[in-house]
Image 1 (cartoon, helix red, strand yellow):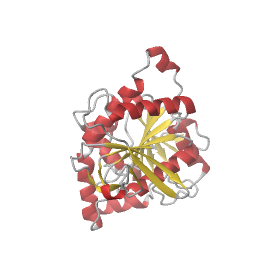
Image 2 (cartoon, helix red, strand yellow):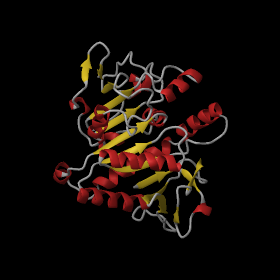
Image 3 (cartoon, helix red, strand yellow):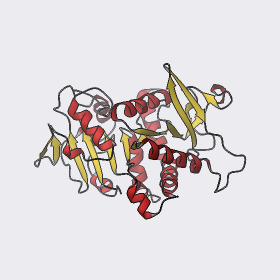
Length: 318
């Protein structure tokens, strides 16, 4: 899988450009939070191999690494006919956790993953660590903006309109937990334009953002087709966030679901959902899994059997 990261490079963990899950650390890049590097990660025989994409000594518009690697990604997807998910992880995720979740997405839902890996695991006392991670999320907006702008440009570069319309590959965007806070700040930023239009679906999974007033920024999201918000009122991670820091969390609140553009999916009462936070990869039930398989492949979550629309709550439920 392709990794795009503004984490610091741990040079001692690289040999000839190849390292392991410790290849990137839990601080921002030494050149600043807007500086991103690309790498490829593969798990073989239970071990991760991370290979850093080399950068030329003098970067120009023609040899910029993202241009080459996103073009390779495009060609790979065209040949494999797989759909692709751009994944932004949440709080307390080192590179290893990020890689394992990304691999779970690929295996369970049959997609290719591009992992946007940001330093959300600064360490220390949990409440201070969380506040630090939120500051880093805000600081990472520029890196996300530049990545999505280049991704959209280079994926479409060799195509004319007819070729684009004939392309079968679908791209979707998935943010999880505090990754939704990073995305919220990006959408609110003046740099946000229509970069997310390249994604068929935008999925805000268990978003660790304020529920009150969420419609103000969610309605600004530009998606090719649909925006989805998932909810579990018993989510144990968001319960901790709720209790210690701020207003009701969007991913844990099944009231005032008033966005005009988003579809809400409340999985609270589903079999084996319980207190699950990682709905997109944890084993719960076939309906939840089918929902994520559909939306991560750019299709409609509303069509999944076992879910019914509840007009009173404006959400799909069991």
